[in-house]
Image (cartoon, rainbow, N blue to C red; front, side, top):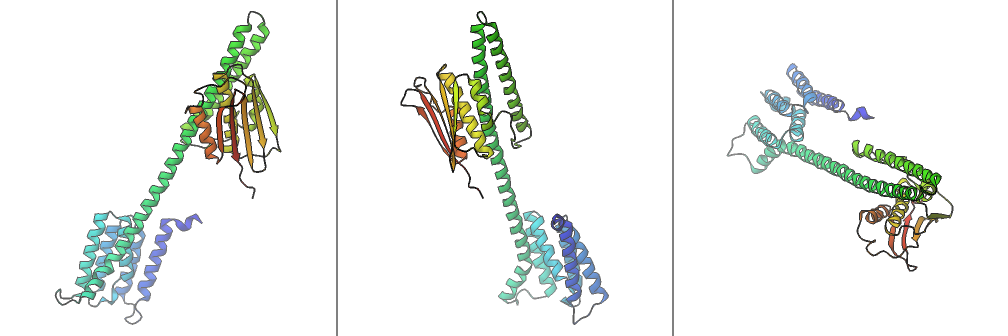
Length: 359
């Protein structure tokens, strides 16, 4: 449950454990008033150790010194160790070092040992006993900071990748729909004198295409405004919309083979955008050419091929955003794509995208 991980719950549990450890840690000396007061005070300080680690360590240190008089058996050892750990975990580095040094000095005072006569092993023990909890807290703090930075980096990379994808989406939407609008405006201009009805229909189609482009652009801009919110159910995007896309192109046909299956969103969008970009490039570089779109559902992949019968177009396979966007989309889906002049003199785009195995 979430409440178990709340800091107050853990601090309360820590306080209860300290109280129990201090009250049960005196089987021979007995529970005097002094022991009970020190145990209750140390346990109560555990409740605020995260917000005020230095203050808590100092007050527990005072209780430690009080408990050490006249004998060291009443000292709140467990509370002292937890307080020192909390300093390393929640306090700045310099404050942690100073606190550890003062704790070493306090331990030396409590033991009341002569500086020159202390054996080396005891010196090491007196130094490490308070220093190790602080070091442990510091290590845990550094690990948490590194983990947080790593998570932030993942989020930032995801945002950048999403924005690159949105840039490709915007390019595809604008390039395709503007080219379609231009096509139908040209048809209307040429047919107004001789066939006003056809010109009217061309203008209506151009108007609908422009409206659809605005709808898709609003979806994408909404995603930008919400800082990387995933795109779901985009209007006009996906294999289901391919017939409408091809019909709007004016000179393309669609052939589908294999048993249609539900595709992952990334693959569904990638296939649509590949066809859209290929049709746009055909109108841009070989206006009037006939285009055949072939979509094949295979057992473990989906294959799409776009062929036009226009003349070969030098430079059309350059590193433009359109073809580069196709390659990146297919690569992100784990597939492969080839684009270039065909042997018949036209241009071919051929992509194969694997499908995930069914569980």
